[in-house]
Length: 335
Picture 1 (cartoon, rainbow, N blue to C red):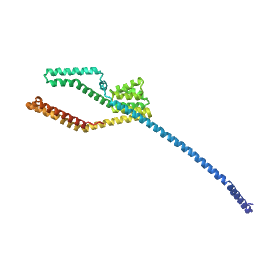
Picture 2: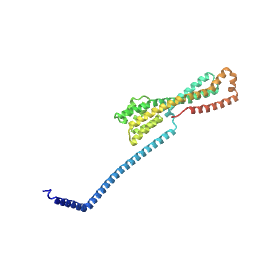
Picture 3: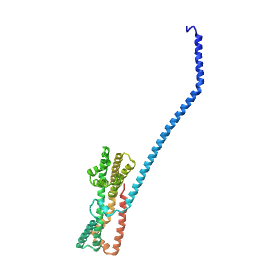
Picture 4: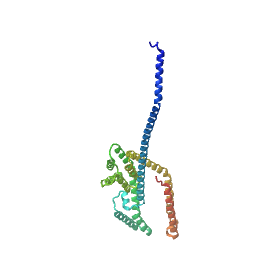
């Protein structure tokens, strides 16, 4: 049947193709218009998405710039406070506190005067010359006690620097284990060794009277004026202003402090030869003068009994003081 009518089938196929072509020709404009509309809608949607992304990125940049400005303002404020503290002349009461002594300035001066009088009595009983009888007790009453206080301050600061990185590690581990910063500081105030223990106890006491952690840490620099303490206060202030990972920041600070300590020890070891040479050169005139006086007293006595000898001794003392001061600055390094 189908094989009998191939012409009919061909006509049907051609009619269908012609109908499809006519429909496509009629609907082509609508199809293209729909495609263009869909493309335009997609572009608008993508533009809105890009605009949202750009706005989000702009907001993030603005937030970062605000945070950076806040950190910079905080650092400037801290630097200004530190500069004001360094410009202030430390009173005797503050120095006694830095040395860890519970003496009042009045008692300190009283002990100094009593020690000077004791030296004067000893020199008077030994029939010392008048310049020695007047000058040495004065130096013993007002110079030696202050030197002792400076020595105690330096020793206490060195002990603090030895223990301070361990205290920062303890705070870091406490924060990572879930404790808040206040409890971590209390733990250091209870478990650390002196003088770190007493300094962090002052921080806890300052918080108990209403100060914030930032202000309490800044006050620590008044009792322990060290750059390392200033670094710690800056880290706490930045974390309070801008947020961030405090445990990581304190861990990095502890590592930096240990590296500074190693660098100081290395510089000290490398400069020991120069310091020994400076000590030998500075002590050589006094050693030679003592040996000459022991072997030939008459040869050296003219320097002490003749006015011209007094002038020579005064000029030699001034030049020796300049030389010792210059050598001391050449062999001392600040890190």
